Every structure is written in structure tokens, then in C-alpha cells.
Image 1 (cartoon, rainbow, N blue to C red):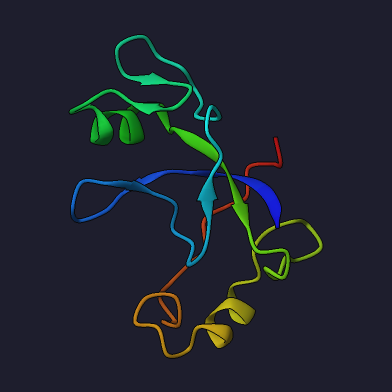
Image 2: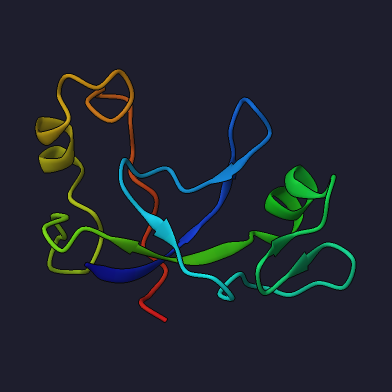
Length: 104
């Protein structure tokens, strides 16, 4: 496993997630912390869409150690699409992996 920071998104069900096929959020790593909106372990109830859209909330996640990264540290989209070619989202030519924001 390796740790990388990604922006969160709100899915169709209103849940916060990272747009990657396999990951685990690291507790206590949500940023930024905004009073009444976000805290180290998440987002205040009813604030998900506001937090993501207004504050660009990110979280540190653990991703598999074999996740293909390009030399500049970004996820290799072409390799991921081939790896998940049978998946309706991650194998699609329209899927663009989220930008890696760092490893802390």
C-alpha cells in the first residue's frame, strides 16, 4: 500500500468518495478544516456538496502499491483503463483519474 492525497467528490448518492477503484481513507486526514463544514475526520452532516465545491476538500488515502504512477507522480490513466477494462467506469475512455495532490 502507498498513501496519496486526492480531492473528494460527491457521488450520485450524496456520499463522499475518491474517484479511484480501490482505496481506503486514512482517518484524521481531511483538509482543509473549516468550522461547521469540515473536520479532520470528515464533513459535517448536510455539508458534503458545499464542502467539496467550495473548499476543495481532500483526504489522504491508501491505494494498492501496484497502482501505476507516471514519473511526475500522477496515476497512469491508460494503464488503469487497461487494468479495469471490464469495469463500466474505470475502464472507460472517458474516465480521468483524480490528480495526486501529494503523499501527506
